[in-house]
Image (cartoon, rainbow, N blue to C red):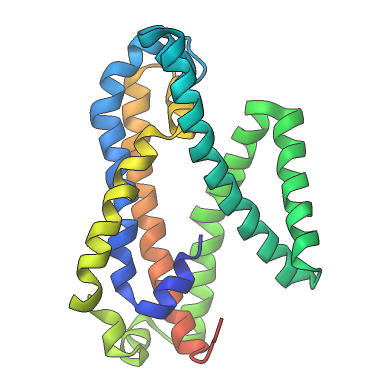
Length: 230
């Protein structure tokens, strides 16, 4: 969330930050899936820690997982609230309540089936709609070559000024998803270890593809709308 805007501000340096995510999924596939077979039948990180460390492990993992997910959900509510406010001109607080209500309603009534269904819709959006938007934007510019010649040169190079900052930022992005309750839950519903490994290798490639599309989309926006202040 906010990645296209960040690319618009700083150029392709932002890609260093996003590369942490596909690397994270490779870590999941390479190391975590080796042990996941011992925990099939569990439904959550808490169940896994209970099986290995007893009740104290379950409580500790529950507290940490709760904090992690609350921060994540807070970001999602914020993003949806801003989107609804921009599209409908409703007050931000009202849009925030609407977005929270929608998410709580479908997850509370539909459970994992509803979440899986929305995952499929998100996948379709990422793989089809956003690349289509890029094609339309490139069509307005004329060609990929035109894009590269019209984008400011500073946006096409990784600046040494931001290099150290982004290399540090990649570490939490690389490691945190590996302990995310959301990712663990998805690992636990795979059919077997082989399916889990293949899924996460595929996911790392998909995320890399989406990252490249977002990068180009931001550069197109920079050319088509060069004076955006927010």
